[in-house]
Image (tube, rainbow, N blue to C red; front, side, top):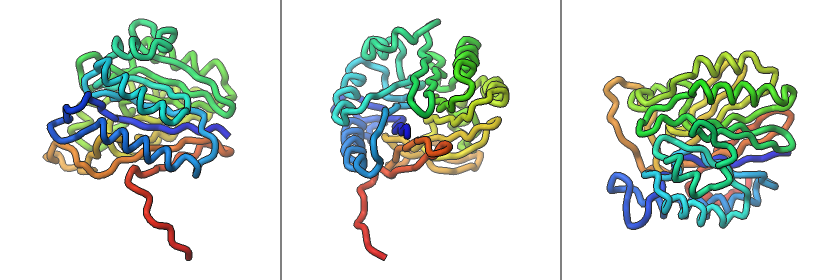
Length: 265
């Protein structure tokens, strides 16, 4: 069985800086790693951890090095893709293994595991909050899906390829989702799509695939579909996801709040 942990939207900064003057994201990530380490014995073997973007808040090398220091405590291979707060250039400096996957300045890659492939897609538009699947990234996805037509695929990206109903986030959503949906309708693979960006857990359908956004490490966004909904975040505990293959994809939400006491029935 292949198992992948997903974390997202860490927004790491170098202490003592706090994001928006409120979030000590370094301490929050340290606590998140503590919680994941505590949870690991519950899951069985984990093949990899993937961070689906906004690893840092400012895209600086120092913050990526802090990320590496913390995540290495888990002794599990990790994968990364950029988000709108990240810097491709700084990521290539801190994660030199990505250089082999970088074309046209974009970071797209495929990693094969026993039960499924993981396809990482770059949705960044430099210096913008919104994202896009560029023609070259869509071509990369088409080729990646065609290579092993009978093997399931987990597609990882930062920007969600759907509207969330959270207006201020949909205003910085994804261009190219329609073209991606066409590719998903054409593929013979069983596909699951995972993303971040929304700091919230939402499940949608796209073509023949299920699409999931993961809760964030750094903060949470309210599910508020009013056109005049306030723009901001809450400090409610976030979460992470466990994606695995068990005669089909199975995705589980895990909270980053402390485990409560377990009571017998």
